[in-house]
Image 1 (cartoon, rainbow, N blue to C red):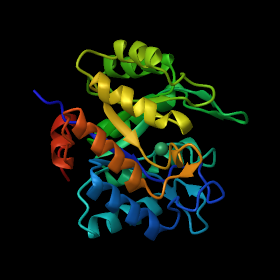
Image 2: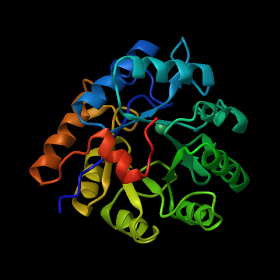
Image 3: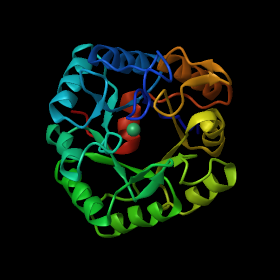
Image 4: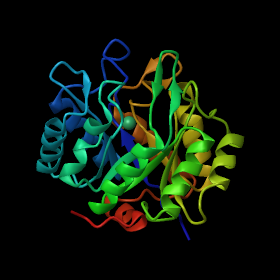
Length: 276
Ligand code: ZN
């Protein structure tokens, strides 16, 4: 049986600036256009971060609400996966989960703390994970359990065991962050092996590791995240023109190796998401 690949488009993130690439969507219109383009190109899930009027990352729930409404107004049916990250260290724990008020179909849950580059610690104490997971559960929001290192698998499994996340869970392995798990096949295999049996898993590689991790993931039977949040280059020294260009390449490769690309409704079925 073919195993359809679910592609997540991570279109803007909370780190990349226009100094790194002029192609990063920053204004509301640009983020909406990138979401729609990504979905049309083959992404079943669009992972969203918000930016304020100056393009600065924010967890402002009102901005998330406007983005979601505008994306839906364009007829885009992608599963929208809202970030509960820290907007690059700008948002406190309460602000981070304020976007859950609109009951998105999906939201991220970064399952542990980590050195994030040279200057910043991305803090996710276990009490926050417990509160965020329970808030998501009460709103029927499917958490994407983000794993940057192996201890985070243990945290995710503890939340499942405690009944705060429905098992076996939806997991995103985030490889190659400076301070986190390395982006190589052995590390990916090690992490996948520690997930609950039958878990849905996807992987991403940051920077120059993006495409190789995407390829490992396709080959291992996992799912794929790509987009300008994780990497601004199409190939060494050549900036990606758009999120769509990165997604198009994954669609092409997936078809070549006999993995059909899942539509957003197929992905809902695979992830246990009830369409809203
Ligand atoms: Zn993100």
